[in-house]
Amino acid sequence: MMTLEKFYSEFSEAHKDEPTATEWLNKYREEWMSDDQWLCALFLNRLFKGFHHIHAPFREFGRGICINTRHSYFATFDYDTLTKAVIMAHNWGIRLEVGGSGPGMIKISITRRKVREGGMSLRHPTIQEAVEKYKDY
Image (cartoon, rainbow, N blue to C red):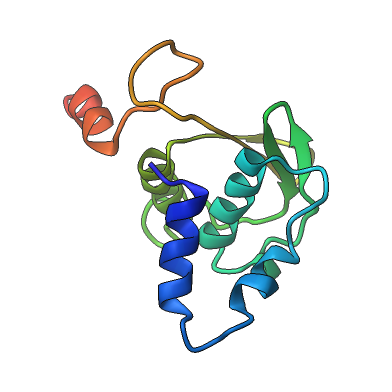
């Protein structure tokens, strides 16, 4: 599962020649965000390949965040953002929900889950567990 410590460690290693990279990244954190909500924002940053591609303000969604967007490339192969989102969600331990949000718009809601086992509203399985569960569908 992804944690802020793990994310910053990987980010710092990838940007070790840029001393202000972490400061630049943190300017996107809203004052109201908890660490879990910030991790959700970092998830969207990685999914959309940069905050500048999100084009929507972050909003609180319980313990998580959500965005309303016109991002129209949620597919499984060509423009494979949907596949990437599902795999990332299982790897990061993020519950991801995609729904309608008006004509031509989608709402993406995400909440961090901190454990792999336990109650339905607390846990998030690995991608291997999900594949095993649904491989015969």
